[in-house]
Image (cartoon, rainbow, N blue to C red; front, side, top):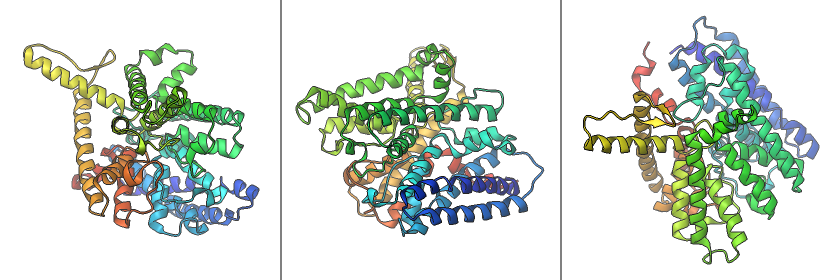
Length: 480
């Protein structure tokens, strides 16, 4: 690994973070919340450290694959560490670990929080919470590739390491152009949702914060009761639409904007995701009707919102699904595991992986019956390389192993098994609310420091999809 090059790029990213930290200052001045010095000082710290790394670390070599893994993993860790400074300096979250937990939850778009009273925070701090999720949704590295030409060389290594899913869709020959297109679609959808929410009666501040965290599949809300605080069917349905869109491959949104809407329906992963979403909504409604809701319209509204929120791994809440029938909770747990589509802002294992695992199992059974037959695993009409299938099988095995180990570690802190497993799946799948004591109406403040540390690692592993982080723990990675 080229350590000098990695440190230089980390310096560039810290300099960019310094600029981003200035964004909440106008809100602080407008609301007169007194938090602007915290953002200014945080920005100066990041700018100073970033400047030192840029000036001191120079390397003529181009970026290799290993360098890309290191930059992405250390970059996200640095964002969480230095992004926590406004919480600490303003006194909003005095604990270093709690501030790190909240920031890691933000940048990884997990949405888990340790804050018992969100509305007690300064508006600019709430805006920073939302902004961390919006930046983390499409990816800080992808944003850097779009606006910093100096990262254009070797950028594909970082792009592949950060973008979620079995493959990273490349829309243009130059990776910088691909990053610009993805962020262009992202900004367009964010602007559209902000406008629609304002038409529903939300203030610009509330609409913008919810648009940031919806398109990022993050779920941070400036309200203690989340989206349920507005008690508006219009607001619920607008957010349902954009939660679903955020969980769809952004390359398909680009094709639709180009007038090639049929490409979305031709995409097998999208059809399966849409079908699974509708099936789970119907089954949850069937289980909830009479047991939870007597009105069909209320059942449709709240069940649809919660299913889409969990399936897209956004994590908003308008109802306490912890009080729903066991069948509904089990279906939501399955939705947590699956998650959204590849190359979306959603977390989870991804629909494409699940689909390919099922097809791989079908091929293995077929070969037992017809040993001489040649049958390929395909996604749509495209054969899937054996290397990709091996990567998916490895990802599934690692995901389940980490889930089991992390659950045992969380149970060792005194949590009951439902809460322990619920907290792990909620952070590893970057959803936020889980089950038990970390359900939709609860938070993570009561978890012991060791447990919070475990969950912080789960968030990073879940957002960067395991391999990017775990490869750093192999001794051969550090050898020349």
